[in-house]
Amino acid sequence: MADTAWPGCAKSLKGVVLDMCGVLYDSGEADGVAIPGSIEAVKKLKASDLQLRFCTNETQATREKFVAKLQRLGFDISVSEVFSPAPAAVAVLKERGLRPHLLVYDGVLPEFDSVDKTSPNCVVIGDAAENFSYQNVNEAFRVLIGLEKPVLFSLGQGRYYKETDGLKLDVGVYMKALEYACDLEAEVIGKPSPMFFHSVLSDMALQPHEALMIGDDLVNDVGGAQRCGMKGVQVRTGKYRPSDERHPTVTADGTVDNLAQAVDMILNQRGH
Amino acid sequence: MADTAWPGCAKSLKGVVLDMCGVLYDSGEADGVAIPGSIEAVKKLKASDLQLRFCTNETQATREKFVAKLQRLGFDISVSEVFSPAPAAVAVLKERGLRPHLLVYDGVLPEFDSVDKTSPNCVVIGDAAENFSYQNVNEAFRVLIGLEKPVLFSLGQGRYYKETDGLKLDVGVYMKALEYACDLEAEVIGKPSPMFFHSVLSDMALQPHEALMIGDDLVNDVGGAQRCGMKGVQVRTGKYRPSDERHPTVTADGTVDNLAQAVDMILNQRGH
Image 1 (tube, rainbow over the protein chains, first blue to last red):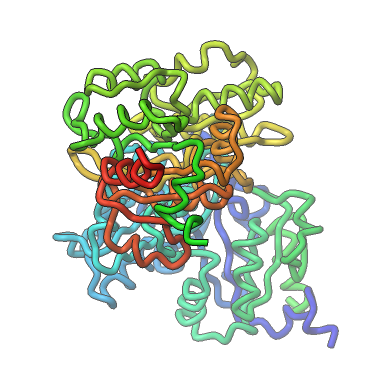
Image 2: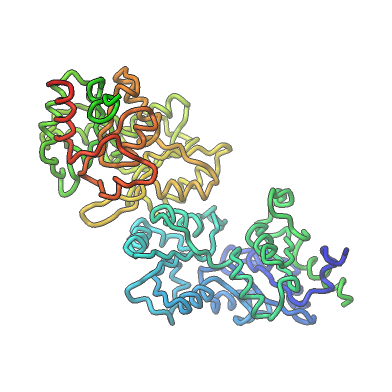
């Protein structure tokens, strides 16, 4: 059964899903910088017989602007290949006839242009940084507490992330705040939500065991994918920390130095 | 054993502890307004052989300013009779040699004048309203995450409160936010913390069963006092809601219309 373990499982793969920040590029000044070898690795995957999708919890900009940034960095990537929480939220809102009060980055607002936002009957929060003022958080709270059946969606559940000027509180922190204030449980949209991974699999028309997730976040990328029945490989770039390899509950199917190494191992196994 | 139940237990009482907002007065424009009968009720208790203390989670102003407001409303009350979280926090900080980073109302800052705040090794948060900006919460987070052994004190753990312009998020919400961000558990100072009630009992040199708490908050006043072995009576003023009388986990020893009625029942039992 060696073929079921990494990298042997690569033989039976039909699709690969890539996390973006920390796998393709590191964020920072302006557009950030591509991680060495990752542009070429994406090219190789596209030239192979594997399907390829990108899966990110990025909610600071629209997919269009985000993809344009990646293209400027040199990546061969298009909007239709990218899965991010905001469009997933829009689909859920429309399906359930919900009208959101939004507390998100200004840059991601256009994603919600097609959604009716009059007399809100739910709240959607994403990473909002400075928009998480007391007044804005209080306003979101008042909408929720005024609803007979309050519904809170959170685009991801991160604790914090790193920017050039230091650590910054992420959306999960404000999700917990509003959960406590209103005595409710938020619905998370994005990794590690199973629904999010399933939407990517569904787009590729693949079963979970036919797909591999490659990410730098052990819990949200690797653990989330594994809970759906996918394989999960961690790269030692981005937010990877050596302690991840001794994590109490999540064990990656494989750990590799970077995306380039992962792709070479996959394609070698497949005899390319 | 009828004497152990309310109001029979009043015979063996040696001290009474009163919550303030919602029991003595209702907050609102300017100083707020005294609840009918409460000024006279405090007078009667002071004229009796019972000890009397006041116990509040108020953290918007110093005790001096807070007590001055009560005096303007007509209450016979002095600073030494009032227990509030900020002075209790100062005692804890000094005892444990901790230097706080403070995220509180500007009005309560003078309470911490005597505390060393250089190179902080803990964080103290209180209700801070507009001071809970993203930048300020993020700053508190960065102090905590930078400590080898992060310690977070929360002055109370309320979810929200009501002001004339509507509901406002209370300190407990930001406590939960920072707990999640830093993966820690805050130490709550104020009601319903047992330590807080014990400090009041200790000041009166009384055993718990010799003291009665009267408050409008079923969980924080009544439940907190009961968990310490005190009796707890709820008044139907302030934040009282009829559903409190069917609460799943906390049952008051007695429920009365207001403080005046409670005091008359106590003093009648004692044969005044």
